[in-house]
Length: 261
Image (cartoon, rainbow, N blue to C red; front, top):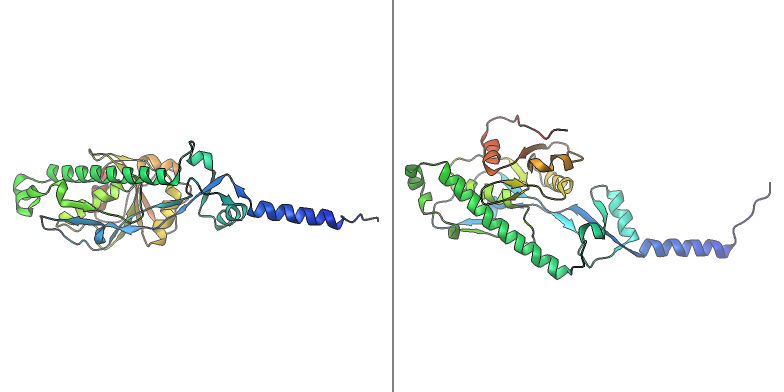
C-alpha cells in the first residue's frame, strides 16, 4: 500500500499554528470559585451595645471573575475547562459594554456599600419587629442604630453578600446562639425590607463554600433553577427573605426544605 508522507514543512506549520492558538489571547472570560469569609469573626463590629460571639461560622461566598481588560490565552481556557469547577463564557456575556477594570471595581464597591446599608436596615427592622419594647430595653437594643454597626470585607465587591451581612448582624446582637457550632454559608442580595434576591455564579459559590467546610447553604429561591450540581455533604435551603432565613437557622433538627429539582 502506498503511503504519502506529509512534508516536514507542513508538519512544522501545523505545530507552529497549534502553539500560536495555545498561547493566543481569546475573547473569553472565566468565573471560578472564590474565597469565603466568616462574618462572625471580625467583618462585623457592633459598638454601643452588648454583642455576642456565636459558635461556628457564617460564611460569605464569592466568585473570581476575569477583569474586563484581561485576555485569556488558549492554554488558560483549556486548563480551566479541564479543572471542571469553572465556567468559560464569551467576554461579551459578562461585559456587554466596554468598561475598564477600574470602573468595574468602582461599581462593585458601590454595590457592596449599598448592600451593607440595606442589610443593616433589614436586620434592625427584624430586631424591632420580633421583640417587645421591654425585651429591646433589657438587651440594650433600643439604643442600637445603623451607626453602631460597621461591616468590612477584604477584596470583595458586589451586592451578593447582603443576606449574610444581615444574618451576621442579628446573630451578633441576639443572645440566642442559632449558629450552634455549624459552618453555614449563604448568598443573596437583600433590600431594606429584608427581601432576598438572586445572584450570579451560584454553582461556583457552592463549590467554594463546600471547600471551606460549609454543610448548610442558604440560597435565594430564584437561584434554584440555576444550580446544576450539589457538592457532596452539603444541604441547600432556598430562602426568599431574612425572616425565612433566620427561621431556617433557628429550627431544631436537620430536616429542611430544598430546591425543587
